[in-house]
Image 1 (cartoon, rainbow, N blue to C red):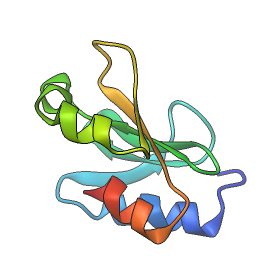
Image 2 (tube, rainbow, N blue to C red; image 1 turned 90 degrees about the horizontal axis):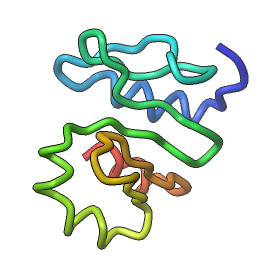
Image 3 (cartoon, one colour; image 1 turned 45 degrees about the vertical axis):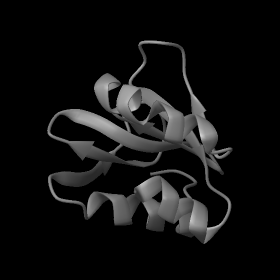
Image 4 (cartoon, rainbow, N blue to C red; image 1 turned 180 degrees about the vertical axis):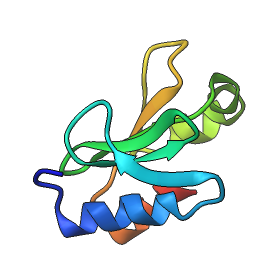
Length: 97
């Protein structure tokens, strides 16, 4: 693991405590990531950008909610990834929900 600050590692570790999730090395960059089975589902791209993989159907169902949150950036149509800007503890809590 290289350069992951303590608070970011704390967010990743909290996410890895969810049922079915596990902590592991990131496949898409340096640092730790959250895995469910053989799929990486969360990692930090940079100091404040948390990438989260949801299914396309979950994004479709929650689209209005996700689009209304200024911390969330949806990717192109068809992607099962989104970005959450995490600066405050409340941002981390939101991302983990």
